[in-house]
Length: 483
Image (cartoon, rainbow, N blue to C red; front, side):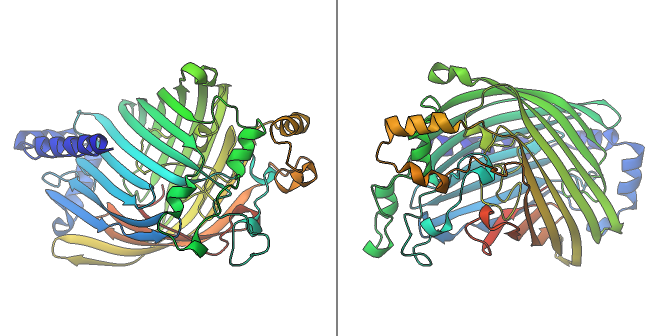
């Protein structure tokens, strides 16, 4: 752990100081690299609204969760605009987030993004270590797996309560990724990337979670959750149950006509790419190839005060076999958020429980209006406050094939004390509504500085009560717009 944090800190300091001495000739070359259209737009921009040099925003990260414990940390986004000729496009972006709870849940992340470190190429580097002692696990295929709220709420359903950790497992994840793109012609670009994931999967460490709690607040021990049952019943294979190393390669093409990459006011972004992920040792059967397609459209409605934006995304497993924990990750060409997890969660379908629809393939959509209510300046920094009502939806396209007879045989062999008459309280085999959409809607509040550093607070509600145990308390505090 300490080595990872020190390494991230070293990389951040090295890149920061090495770019602090950007020469005037370099900035002149950046200006010369702009198209005539971009130069005209920059020259027409009011001089007092152009940001130069370094700017940064920093926020404390303090929170409390009954099971995750107290969280303390800090996050910061540092931008370098040079002589301002490219503003609001930054020359370099550095993002650092360090946060940890008393119950082994945390974020240790460094992200670097630039179009100018390598001339005419965009480079993104991400190094993240994400321990999660109580990670969501709701089973496979969305509505085919039953979400029993009365099992996880001891205050509202004391008579049927089992454990708040029933739909939880432990997942530690390390991610190291580097992605680069270059221009083909016009608005078309090529993309390539490589990286590695490491997953450590297991049962929730209830002794650690209960440490320091009052007796009435402790989670019951000796209780098997959904993850343990899936392993016992053979739904999760023994080879994938504990996780492992997964290096990957990806490549594809992008079309990008946006006026800027960060919080655009108009244009289209679309990409299509393949990701080959390898596995070794006991996991050697889990080599796989996934296909992704993403389409985003930004439509100005009234100047830059009202914007209509939507995103359509697709991910399919086209060859091989993917472990269940990898099917909870949405592949992206550029890693700009802590995690991209599906189906559900604050980065894909807000209001729907994270990992509610684990499957081999899926699609989702986000639709929102973005309103800028007011703009103001504090010294040299430009601010605005915005609201964005939104609608999210997702659907499973490649479900797991669950064989009822095989599952029953595994239960009889490995879990003989289980009452088979209660199996329908866990899984629905007749008319499971696997392909029924998961829908939600909500409202977001945005506080932005220099059109780049955006504090985002979203609140969302699922349309179907089976999609989240917390029907009306789904808040997400994050950086920047979701897309």
